[in-house]
Amino acid sequence: MARYKAIVKYKTAFYSFYLPVAASMYIAGIESEEEHNNAKHILLEMGEFFQIQDDYLDCYGDPAVTGKIGTDIQDNKCSWLVVTALEIMTAEQRAELEACYAQHDDACVEQVKALYNTLQMPALYHKFEEESYQRLQKLIACHAQNLPHSVFLNFAKKIYKRNK
Image 1: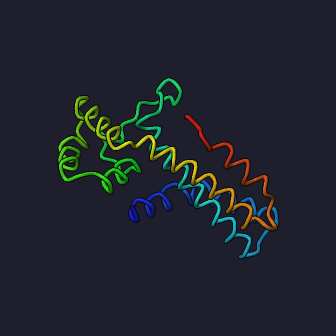
Image 2: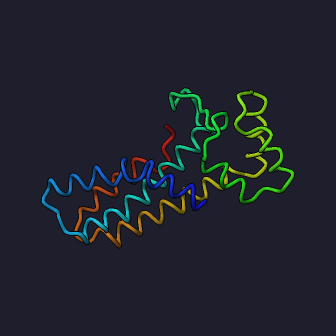
Image 3: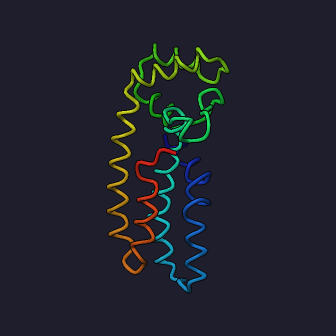
């Protein structure tokens, strides 16, 4: 999970969330290191939340809504689902996962999805989503003292419970 979070931090959170806001802050004349660190604290958490949602939607999202067919399982992606599953599965389930993950075979993909369902991954994800959103609300209240709360709250509202 630590490796997954490092990947997410540098793959998604920095360039999709923190850097655009940091650039906007500089353009707006906000140069305080403390304010930039506060924004970074909020936005890196938000970026992690967004990427985990993306991983979930890759497997469980409706292609008619998301506009794409997920391929994380076939493409051997280091996704939140597989990392979390690896933390809670039995040795037998791990053997099944290792035999099917990263295979470009529909039956294998369905077997991995069935394994995720057995492990109650959708329920774990929804629990994570709710806890993460509450954590974001607290971070915004705590760290956006001199920054407009609405910027962060609007970002959070746009990504919370998104389906695409």
